[in-house]
Amino acid sequence: MGVDSLRPGTAADRVDGEVPPRVGEPDSAQAFADTLKHASAERLPTVIRGGGTKLSWGRPPSTVDLVVATTRLNRLIAHRHGDLTVTVQAGMKLRDLNAALGLERQWLPIDSAFDEATIGGIVATNDAGPSRHRHGTPRDLVIGITLALADGRVAKAGGTVVKNVAGYDLGKLVSGSHGTLAGIVDVTFKLVPIPQTSATLVAGYTDPAAFAHDVAVLDATQIEPAAFDIRADAGETPFQLKLRIATSPAACDAQIAAARALVSGQPTLLTDVAEQATWAAQLDVLTHGDPVVRFAWLPARLPQVLSLLAELPRVEDVQVMFAGRVAGSGMARLSGQTSAVAAAVGRLRASSDVGNVVLLRGSRELKERVDVWGPERPSDRVARAVKQSLDPAGILNAGRGPI
Picture 1 (cartoon, rainbow, N blue to C red):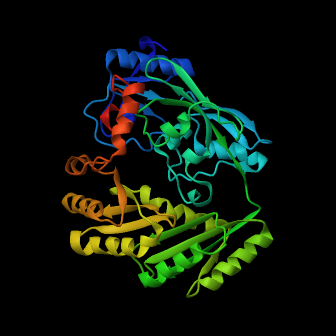
Picture 2: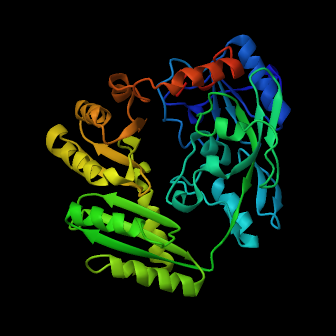
């Protein structure tokens, strides 16, 4: 793909408000790599675009000269249902992939808040939802990958079977790199069977201590949830736990009964449409326009995290809606004036109870007050060395971070 095949950018191609003058839509791995080679030679700040659902994430770009879209790289290459693996191009939507896999009663166990989210974007951001509790993040599911490098080469690593560990683990390297190291062309994942049945136990609390106690008790049992989430919001029962069991009917009934016996109050059992709705609601922290922060904590510190979040409305005058995984990762939507939200982010970063506080989404004014990625960490030095090796011209992701 040469420079002559680039088209003019439009308002639909905006990256955090910036309209790129040129857009490339490669249809092969080599065309993708050739486009990045041209961008490197010309020193064009470049953003790789999938479904466009997370283009507001990251630092505001000073300029974006080129967007490379994976629109035409949208095929399911191979579904090896006997091996429980699939190879798919980066531009295919997650929902379309799982619809195809469902014909063989299999799925890629990744949840996304965005209907238009593509495979490449999900891996690049390591975007994970409630299914992370059992199956891990996209980084944990990748077993092979093809990358377009900034020097025009195409690199492959891993393989098409779960036991294959050939080559450098480039899949883990680029997972969560936000497009700063290379372009993702296609990915091979391990899959799981769709469970025979599932049910979700939902329990609401007014007392944060009782809530944290029940979470800890359930987490210490032999119960094996497919998902185990928590939520804190305004309402009659501001704290909720959600525990999903997905297995055979007999095992599901037994584990739900065991969990119900350990939960105080009167938990509600959800199945079918109601169950789907409660898990969709668990992702809605990302589907509104308010600023969103992502952070992590040690599971044993959940009571302290809840206290910290409860302080924010009183001390910083922001409204907080929080949803996360019991294992210790989550997101909070912060509603309020820009100055108040900036102060709330600062308070989270100053706390010893949470870590890796990242401003996923916010206005340009907020991003000018608060660094999106937070203070430098010791690992950033190594990450910058890796980027220098793979992207010596520094064009990829147009300075939006994380490196």
